[in-house]
Amino acid sequence: MTKDQVKKVLDRVLTWPPERQADLAHIAELMEEQDTSPLRLTEEQAAEVRRRMADPNPKTMTLAEFNERLKRRYGV
Image 1: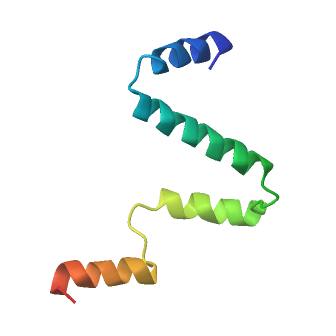
Image 2: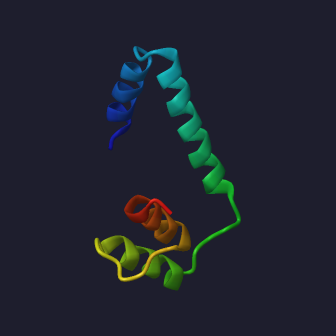
Image 3: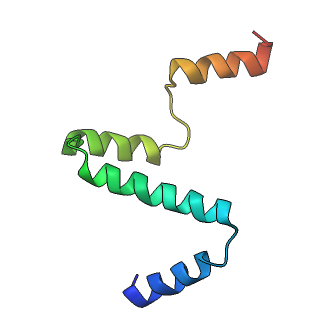
């Protein structure tokens, strides 16, 4: 995306309701915070994230996902 395209988007943002502008500002702040974080994934960890995101039907799930599935299915 060129700087000109970014400027056009930001000009449109200024026409949004204040709450939506605040949402976008918050997202931008989170991105900046992430850029300054000392935490980084190793290449191996990043590859694992990409692998998991690419599999639409994983064979494993988190405990929270399992509990949610039980709740939906059996009301537990």
